[in-house]
Length: 490
Image 1 (cartoon, one colour):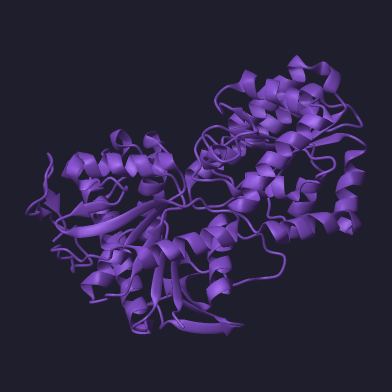
Image 2 (cartoon, helix red, strand yellow):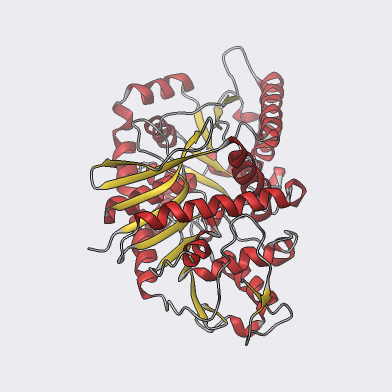
């Protein structure tokens, strides 16, 4: 039986009560469906030189993890991955910090990922690489002689070319994607942005009619494959929530008031500052809602070492204090801001109890909280989803109340509409969204991607992959390619 080998920046060993992120949810579901091996960073920093790969087996799955050094963590993870690629892909160019040293370490760590992976592979393995931290991994594996099929899925947005070319090594990053047999994206917008970049670098002939890409004989499939959630599991947890102590505490704490819920990592892409301003505008514009609603925002600090995140946390604390100071009564706190991790089961209880899901990122690859909110609702009395039109989920959840996350007044109006929407309209909107969420659930995502990887052309072409892990690869002419930038990897 073909084994699935998943590789991501960090391996999340399942722990009871944890709330896994979108990538972890997706990878775990794929591994449970197919069995296999998950390879990645342990999350630990080595005191000296990193030790060997540690393999742990649980049920049908094996987890292979290794440590990073402090310098690797600073330059690979905080530096190039989250200081350059993350803001670039989310169009926050003002936060982009590029360093040649960080990029060299990024390549070096990807080389180490490749070396650890190559030693663990079997001839018939299917390899699935996840997300922006590991874009060069495919080319590093090819340089080591790995010939198995390799797919790559980008969980975050792919930037438009006007933004993408701001990265000094944008060509090298794009060339690295040619090592994969399949490149998957969340939305058609992301795929279109990828095609735009390919066309700008290699010419229009490089993008074929079926959306695949051919450069120097290398044929790469490129497809949209939106990630989903485990609908059945969420439905089960949410339906059982009213009988749990955590849910009873949530409802008791509301004192009969209606709940507006937001659940996000603390990140500048999530539009949290604008969301808090919109809620304050809502209370100021619609005073009849005073003492009748409570906004709970759960936003644990995701990357404590990134200064921008501390700035956001301070801004949110000030915004919550200002709103509460302006509108609160002795028995009513309009905003409850929880800057800590909450168990996943408890979050499902919050989603079930909420009358409004307030999901307004300023840019997001998908946003699984939006889909979780839909899946957690009571079909007989569903809440209303207020969703940013700039989230990938908005391409699927078209019957949500779609808002511009920069439009404070528009978001305030959407909250008012959501809270007073008649039951038949709520049920109709919910049913349409639930149909999409169920059709594109996590299992469908896994199956579609793996089937597409097996069916991918897999033509090697004439490209020669870079083997120097510590230096920026120098581009050379690709014979037979067209376009203004006829350059490719060496």
